[in-house]
Amino acid sequence: MRSNLVVVRCLAVLLVFSVFQTPLEARVEPSHGFNMFSAQEEVQAGQQSAAQVSRQLPVLPDSDPVSIYVQRLGEQLAAHAPGEKWPYSFHVVNQKEINAFALPGGPVFVNVGTIQAADNEAELAGVMAHEISHVVQRHGTRAASKQMAAQLPLAILGGVMGQGALSQMAQMGLSFGVGSYFLKNSRKAESEADLLGTDIMYDTGFNPRAMADFFAKIQEEGGARGPQFFSDHPDPGNRAQAVAKEVATLPRKRSYRSESAEFGDIKQRVAGMQPLTAQQIAARQTPAMNASSGSVAPSGSLRNFSHRDFVISYPENWQVYGDQNSAVTIAPQSGVSQNAVAYGVMINTYQPEDANVSLDQATHDLLASLRQSNPDLREIGHDEDIRVNGVAGRSVDLIGTSPLRDQSGHPSRERDWLVAVMRRDGSLLYIVSIAPDKDFESLRPTFEQMLKSLQLR
Ligand SMILES: [Zn+2]
View (cartoon, rainbow, N blue to C red):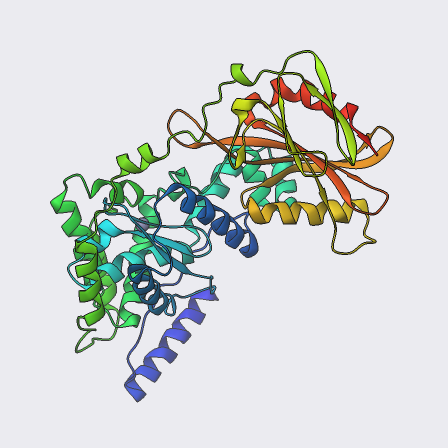
């Protein structure tokens, strides 16, 4: 039955073709694969990772002329991307090595080194069309889904589909951030991105061969600048032939877009820039503070702090930052820097917008507001009821990014334990216990002891 139908369809198409002489345009269909992420989670995952990328890499401001140009070129290409309309955004990293990468759901990053190496606009467009294609094909979340499915027992996997792949991913300590395994594409993903990229190039008016030419050029040049691109985008082999084969399925065009004056200006501008090397970027990420687990160890004896709204006991060798009328951080001296807490306890109040909400709703509003200043803060597990000296409260476990770096210069994972209690006036008093993930359990008894001592006024 099925094959007959195909024959009928082919005949119909041939008939239309021969009668009207319209060109038979073939377009690559985006591939689909097992994916635990909803479209919404896909976008969320990319945005969280983009915020992290901006903190770790020297991303040029959006107002920089180079960023503006790349954003505009990206928009032209993305307008011809098939499939779901992802919220694309385009950014430039002030890095010397030739590379580009795409995060799930739209953010695309291009290194200054890539623009420096491109001889014409079509070559740069080729790299960007290729990255857009990774977004279209959802290669990052597909790779992450595969990994999670391999690690999780079937029973949990069922739950994940309902509860959200993003939080499950965070719980497993996986991410799409800088250096993420999921941004290193497979050869199969590469050839898919090349083919789809060919169509996007063509439909935007560029000569698609420029994409393969550029890849071949940086591969030939080798040197210190190229390999990074090929470690994230491995050569699937016969790139040029595959692109040529795809181009042959498209209607012949007499001419492609010619050189833009804008590209010339930008080329000149980047030629004068001195982007940082990967090594310099890593060195820039020196530890924000120098706290070792030993220097933050709490002493056994306690002392009381009396605030306008509460009283709490804390280890004698920790400090109180703030006063009896303000938000307060109680922490070891080496556990805090000017604007970040790596080890310690923060106590603050939160006024829900709606005065009559439940404790549960107020806690969720609070979490949403905390997430605005800490975009990668994620809830793990479910929040629970808790009683703090007879007062009903909610307890939530979170993970985020610590201001401390690990030995390889990457930010360490942070555990945050939030407890919120409702005060008589409907506002929340909340206390967040903070430590790098690896040290959290050893500090937990101290955090619990402090919470037990908390008395609302
Ligand atoms: Zn690629």
